[in-house]
Amino acid sequence: MIGVLLAAGVGSRLRPHTADRPKCLLDIGGNTLLERTLRAFGAAGIDECVVVTGYLHRMIEEAAASYHLPLRVRFANNELYETTNNNYSLWLAGRVTADSGILMMDADILFEPRLLNTLIDSPYPDALIIREGKMGKEEIKVELDGGRVRRIGKEIDPPRAAGESIGIEKFSPKTACSLFSILDRRKDRYEFYEASFQELIDQGADLRTVSSGTMACMEIDTPEDLQEARILARSISA
Image (tube, rainbow, N blue to C red; front, side, top):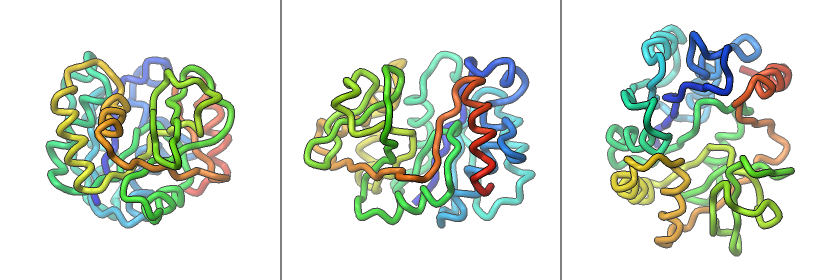
């Protein structure tokens, strides 16, 4: 299984914090999000990771090289990061990961490292992490049908949702291959990669969910999120 980390975005909602650095290089409790995530990959048994960069990509490459990580890190640069969405970045990763299973996530998530083991060790070949709780219009929500993911997206009515997808997923080699075939057709659409997940589901993929339970995890999009994450990080080992 290969790790895929999507870190191409500008992080415009976090300005001025991201005016001179990518979001994944923000300091969260004494460590960058990038270092925290890559070390969590290594601790979970992932020995190779593809990081898709874009905005200020050289800074990410140099930072990763300075961490002396226990895994091999490769890079795929999304030169069109200003005009594409994360579906394009994920498609770029597919050109590098070949026929491998993947453990993928966005680079703006603070989480307890053991959450990755919970997902990897789950009995489902294809699954994503959800967080239960209050949800609104902006969250990527997940609707279930007998345990199987039926729908995923922002447009789902919150009362129908089992939880929020926080942006951490695993796919078996077969399903990853199908996903990247879909992305190959949809990559030029300005949309979130969950739209390709939905097409995968509609084709019959048995995508399941794994609850984050009491394990801390959050996406960092705004200055308020950043402040909350820096407090939360005190309870999470780097």
